[in-house]
Length: 191
Image (cartoon, rainbow, N blue to C red):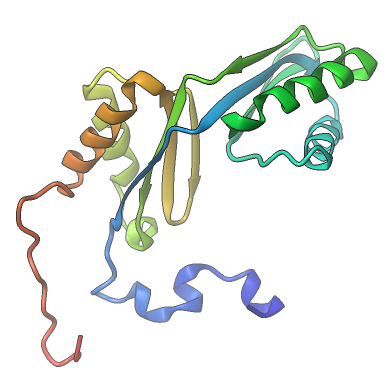
């Protein structure tokens, strides 16, 4: 991919994906190998997130989802997900840094989480996808711990013991679990 192409959306790079044949929803993916880490009450100032994720990158940690919530006290909670297999390394790195300069009130690690992701190139052009996704989880009484989105996906971190129900609920909400898949033929397109 050239530098010029790097800033473009999937639809700009592959114009056919925006056509009438583009699938709104392609599928559902899930991951049960992640852990959630939260640093409580880190200083809410420019550069803290950069410092945190630089230190983790230097330790070889792969970060997935990130959420930061500020407080009026001048502190923030930063939560992120990463492979559960890296939990011990992350804890060691964060405990060293916490005492040196961040003065956070604690590190919480939750390995009992899973991620359910809805994928589809056509999502950005259809309203109601996000509402349907979260309603499906709500109807199953599944609590969402974190959310991450892009033009082609919606991901939610949920309690691990709810992951299978979450996947099933999303499949059903978007008719991905039908016994028979209908073939759509567009006359004259050759597809």
